[in-house]
Length: 192
Image 1 (tube, helix red, strand yellow):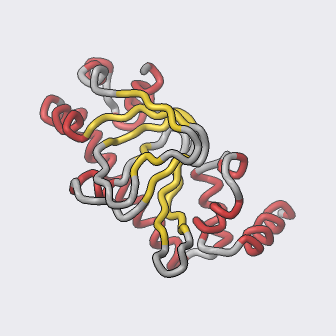
Image 2 (image 1 turned 120 degrees about the vertical axis):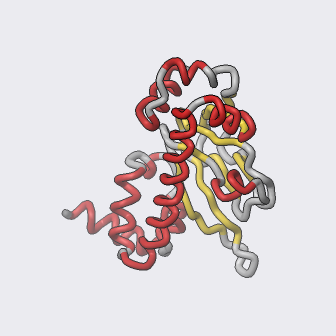
């Protein structure tokens, strides 16, 4: 819990007194590789903070049966199907543990209760919303304005250890390229 408190303090300026309001609300969960945080057509009811491990959000293409990775989440990041979470409607994606992982999570009702008790928690909620919007927008813009090589460099910056944690075909899917293209990009990067 101390690590969670430190993360929330650094991210959203939650002080010790305000964090104490939430200590009984957080639950710890350990995921095995392949387990789902949230599944397609389920409503996301929890906001998670990753202590260790990697998760991915993906959708399943109905026509091809291919899984297409949209987001990765790793240590010290929030994991949530945000649109489903804030609207309490079914999710269009799957969110799955790519490795064994541990998170702390809080139910949406408890989070809203904290918002009503504390301006610091309200502020944290606003920062999380802004972050979710920014990540989604940057992801969309990366396909419009960036090359696969630039997307690769952004991925390394956001998730430095991801290449040691998950298979390369998942990374290629996230970058919107095929495996051989990823191999060429990695080879060029190592030559620089």
